Image (cartoon, rainbow, N blue to C red; front, side, top):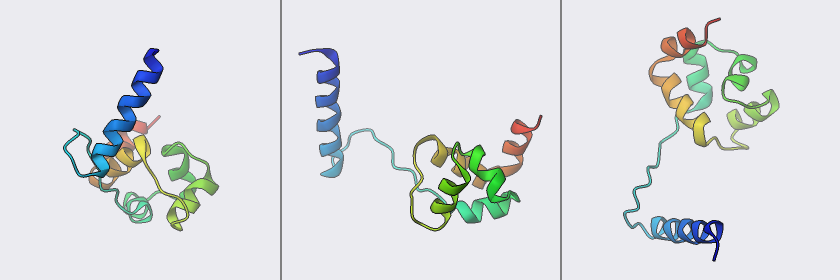
Length: 93
């Protein structure tokens, strides 16, 4: 069996263990409301979408609840919620 197949099997086993409530080391992050974070940080939808690495239409779907946010975008959203000024400083040209 090659490395990819072994990795896929291990990932599937870990996912199943997580779903059973077993300790896997996985961390589940609670994602704040994108719209509330955006408004708190004083960003428009047009400014927020590329910040999270998505199109404006995709971001609007997230605000309407038609899509969910995950991965790095979800983590950035948490940082924006806690430290919007730090993110603005980091992204300033």
